[in-house]
Image (cartoon, rainbow, N blue to C red; front, side, top):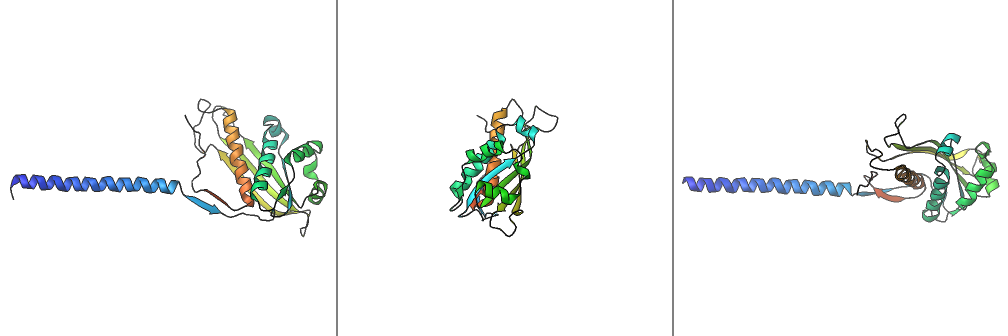
Length: 223
């Protein structure tokens, strides 16, 4: 075989091999993007709100309520709305009434559960015991590391033991889910709204089947 023919054949083989690498790399990228965008069905952890009247209440430490005054009313209001819209047959007590009632009865967290349900005249009471709520890591006011955590209890007025929770669950939400986000990249309001949205979604999802992203994006959107 002549030298020129050998060189042409070598170039052709090299080009073919390179094309194969390019196509393999492209397929890998497409596959990764498809996997990233996958959605999955997640079943409800508790279905007892269906076709029932429901009240949503929440409480936290006084220091937290003072530092973050929108936390309780926003969480109560939005969880109530999500349940109303997504749980079949649920009749949710107006969250404005619940927030006002909690203010008028500051000792309500120590009230027997059966009395709460009777006082509010509902079949189910969802109690959000928010034991952690912060926007920064401890001792560092320059970084954002939002965390909202709560024990979620559901009292059943017609249950076997109305004074005990029929279901107890836990939610721990974080926003953003990336490290190193500082004040130059986002403001306190943006972080708190993102944290509240994530927290409300994860609480509400306990009560109805839903579709969610397999890999949720909870970062900061940069322009």
